[in-house]
Length: 323
Image 1 (cartoon, rainbow, N blue to C red):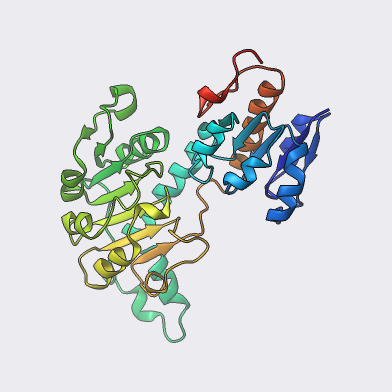
Image 2: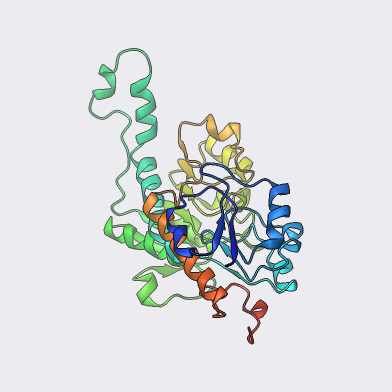
């Protein structure tokens, strides 16, 4: 019987699929502290990583046969160190696609129709009579707008589908041209041109040295003053100070952010703006999605414990072929 560690108290019911193995779970709503992890990891055969795994924590994984990232993004794991130590790492990107794309469209429509601002106004003290007058604080219809998808992977492709359903034109940027089955009738453009022509720009890239800070002052200057920016990917991809300045100065119509550079800290300048929608990294935060994430984590772990190469292996060079 193997010991399997889940670093955070995420919905746990589906981890029952790992029985009769022992699951080390911190309890709902909490996480193992660093010292607890350093003490527990040496005895574990697998880890479900819901947070950072740096070199020191990886060095404690003496018997770990697989680390599964709880989600799609794996920038919190020191992949170079894991590969150097021969620790295979996998992720579960398919499980988060729908929920994250749904949130992207939710944020887009909230921005275009000024939902959050209207909600705040109707809750303020005083009369609401003037709020019900026709023609006040009008929003924007998505039909006919250009949706710029930065990163046409699983989530980006699903967002593009939603955009087409809303009768939006879709353009995208990606390292490679995507087949029609993924991109539909979307045009591939260089990032500067995409920023210039798009009414809504939404980010769906993984965080890498190339994408960190990819939307800064120069890139924001390419965008129209009537355009909107949405980030559900990683906070460090956007220069938050430059974004706040563009919004404050009316060089951008609005933004919606589910992720931040220094989570859980959120810049006060962004919180002060009425044309910004903020959510606390909830892209995959539905019970159905979290259950699917747990199920796919279990699948990867059971494959590895059985000596089978797990799906979505991120560093295949760390997998010993004669296991």
